[in-house]
Amino acid sequence: MRLHYYHARQGNFGDDLNGWLWDRLLPAGWDAGDNTLLVGIGTILDRTIPSAQKTVVFGSGAGYQSPPRGFGGTTWQVLSVRGPLTAQILALPSAKAVTDGAALLAMLPECTPLPESERHGVVFMPHHYAMETGIWHEICVMAGVELIDPRSESRESIQRIRRARLVLADAMHAAIVADTLRVPWLPLVTSAEINTFKWVDWTRSLGLPYVPVILPPTSALESFRAMTLTFRGRNFAVAQPSTDALLADCARRWRKDQNVCHRTLCDINHGLFLLGTRLLMMASCNRQNTGLVAAAAIMEETTRKTPYLSNENTLRQKINQLADSLEYLRNQVR
Image (cartoon, rainbow, N blue to C red; front, side):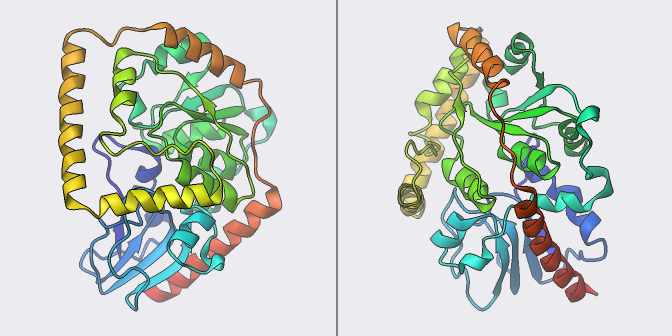
């Protein structure tokens, strides 16, 4: 098989899991010239998936760009998707909604959950885009929280999550990994670029709610980022995340995404945003504002809230379903 996943320019925790996890799970399963494509971990069920004679979907999610043409046809084999929203919007049977493929980390010996006596500290992982505009190192110091850069080496980040007492997650896969490793976690949101659809898709797969703590902009760059999200087609927040509202919002964005003129305008606006960001940085406009103190206070207060953790039996059932699909793939590549 060949593997498809998103490659972030500077690295991104959830996507980077693909770079080594599948080799561990299917060590003999890869051939760059093969005509079978495996769609891996990430919100990547979209039009960027390359064509193949056969495409296998394993624990992936929808939620950003419109789906590929012909999705679900005779050349597609959907073993599982991230959650019920992905299954519903792609017209898949509800049984295909298992959970995110990153839960397969539970099958690795180095990811065995640690006893509470061996875990310490609170960690925070922002979305990788937030790292480009926020002052998160300073905020975490003020809040007594350890920052995990989502662009850092993913295996090292996993081990720090594993040793934590509590994980604060703006990056969704920080929460997914924490829950898989049985570390309590809480969701935070640094901007409207955080995708409500994909978060609720995953949390509902495990019977969990999604009520994130909202952090204010912490710098001029973050305020500028927030102001431009809609113009760049990157506002993914849904204030009242009912099933109908989430599906309608996603379908609306997909209709716009299928319009080449709309995509081109968003790309132009994003280019202007990047230029504006550089100019602000050259003008030293990324100094802290009152939002920094407020964000640190909110983060510190959040550490005292009741954390999330999925039911042990529910998670184990989902992991067993993923393991069955993994065994099926192993038999296919032998």
